[in-house]
Length: 309
Length: 248
Image (cartoon, rainbow over all chains, first blue to last red; front, side):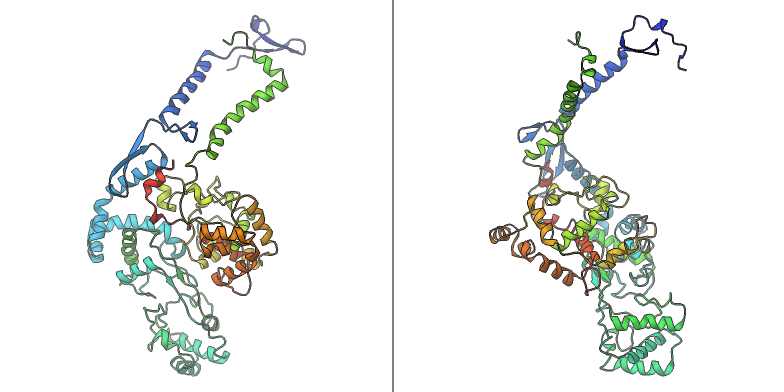
């Protein structure tokens, strides 16, 4: 509790600033407490020691390098050391972490995908490490569970794969990236033809399409005018080598058919893609940003999300 | 030794107080900032860093206009957690043509120093229009007008000339162009030539088609072009990690 009965009498003998208010209100000028003063001096001594231990004061074109050094392995594989700095510390820490995870990464590098997926210890490593890498790099597009987004990014948890769902194919997609493309038919075909094609495509997925229009659409699909079969295949099941979609499996990536409220809207969504084409579906190449081991780890993680083949 | 010293002397003399305060405060700046201009290792010598193309530069202007730096830093610090999430730590050399630099000081959103190439153009467009549509947990505001607004390109030459005055090597004449050819190679030097700035800007926007609409150059084109180049200029696979250690 503050002593507010402090009177003018009791502060006699203490130096004042000479300021007086209201007749008897004075400003005292007490010296700093001794503990405070010495703590202040101690911080100065601490700073001097700190300057000597860590890189600090600039001198000419250089600076005091400090007393510590850090050893790390250089690119030639030799042990090397440099005065303490955050970059050297990071390099050392990274190399230590690599050693700590070495048993896992060595196995990942040497084993086949199937062996990795079937090894219970490695699977749990992949589940945790893969999830971290996936969240940082993949989830922004494919969403945190890999469910993708209709109209933008493919679902990784179903068994429909544009570029193939085997380990090798997933690895290739991750490493080199992908770029989706479909030419626009808005000018090559007239409105009625696009309508017929859309009905046919809708019927392929079991949609409630106009049978007559769908039949005409089927002709167009296989004829020179539409030539849809050229990329989507005679069976309309798509071709992995081109990344063309399987049109028969009720899985929609670009045309938001599941989100459309009625059949007319669903067909409209398909028409929009046929007329406008696609020049998107870009998957960035991850080599360079991620290591080959990380990509292999992600390959197994994505494969195990549920849709791997 | 302070026996005859009374701080009253300073406190009651405004002029002396001002001079001594300035002296005390300037020590921090003198020790921490001034030497950086003289130390030989402040800016690392690495290949690949070049000034922004006219389109990227306009994207950067919009980045600043929209205040992106208040929530996004462009500075990956040399810590393991940051390196794992964002990539290689930032080098001083990578922002040597930034005036002002965009290091930022607050991360409400993630660091953007190496966002270039990480996501597709489409993702950036969708994300800038409505971030929550691709990142449900995001608190970033929507920037739909970027896609709708045509990029103001009328003053692109003046903007590059202003940057040139701060020391960014955009070329205003043939002599400077030849110097850039030597430093950056012909392909890059062409993009830095101020008399061709408008042509280069439109050309890059058309070719890159960053916003998915070739009919006009929108602010989105510039913004995405800028984001896609961030942190991509230096090829770290060609640099030994220990060489960067020795710059500090």
